[in-house]
Length: 121
Image: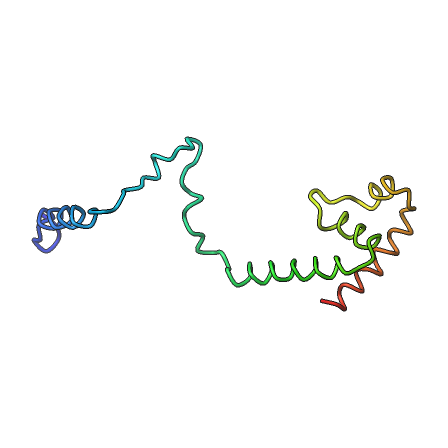
């Protein structure tokens, strides 16, 4: 007996009837029956803190940066891609060793390109 003298049994029977009716033509999917035994099912639960608008704006900004970088001369574009867009990004020192260009020259070019990007975006 529940609070107020209400029995839980009729509710349970109604729930069983509802489930029997609603599953016609449907397949029941269990998070516990996933093929990947290491999965907990958490990855399919929506994140209430996710900011969809922010994610879209970020994606559009990255797309715009890539467009501007692609329009640069190849030497400049290669520098920015190596430092910021590739995974994992290179350091100035690593890029210097790879290309043979002095670190300070790369530093000045990077600063000039970042100012240009800021104006273009």
